[in-house]
Amino acid sequence: MARYIDLTGQKFGRLTVIKKVEAHTKNKGRATWLCRCECGNTKRVIGQNLRNGHVRSCGCLAREKSAERSRKHGYHGTRLYQTYIDMMRRCHNPKEPWFQSYGAKGITVCEEWRNNPKAFFDWAINNGYNDNLTIDRIDGTKGYSPENCRWVDFSIQNFNKPLSSRNTSGYRGVSFNKATGKYVAYISRDKKFRHLGTFDTAEEAYKARLKAEKELYSDLE
Ligand SMILES: [Zn+2]
Image (cartoon, rainbow, N blue to C red; front, side):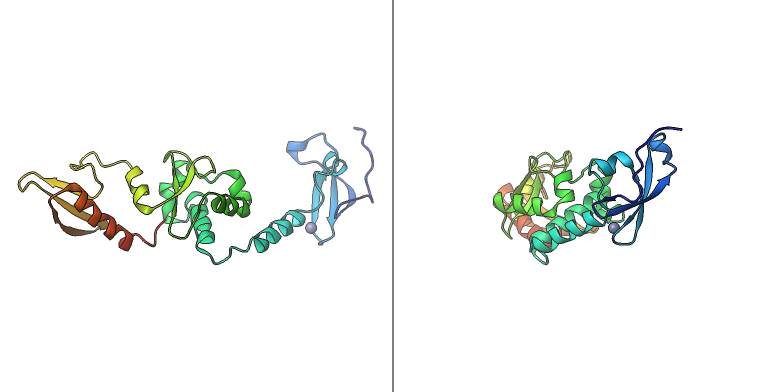
């Protein structure tokens, strides 16, 4: 039988060791202890993790700390808070419809922001966030992180998206009509197509498109 230091009865943080137990398969051969936490839960912990202080509760300590952090940050109910929630949903909630375009394609929220909303809020405030701006990923193939994000006007965000190969004007939502020599602006959402007018220049047509976008897409990212 392997030798080990008997920890029965000792206290480590919120945990009191009850008795030695069979180790989980992945920890085979390492002395493992059943502990009772001050909150009433029990937990199996490897002796080494108790002695070096890595594990000090059943998990309730970390949960309390994170709850306290989120109470303290004071952003509940703000637009910025909603931005955070939406970003997390798109990337990390498979039940979210937008997940198909984000999480499912490997677009994630960096670990720091994922674990600590306050880190995200601090970054936002220090990087010029205001309620008229939306979050934008500089490289659309990469995830949300301080290195790859910035706050932009909605219009800039649209310029960055790749245009369809069928686009004839160089502007999103604007096509060139060869027969009339004019530019046609259009917009579509949820399979509804709306004609926005005919214009002499691509720029004018694009302005109409941007105006329509602000109205139609204001509830999205
Ligand atoms: Zn506990």
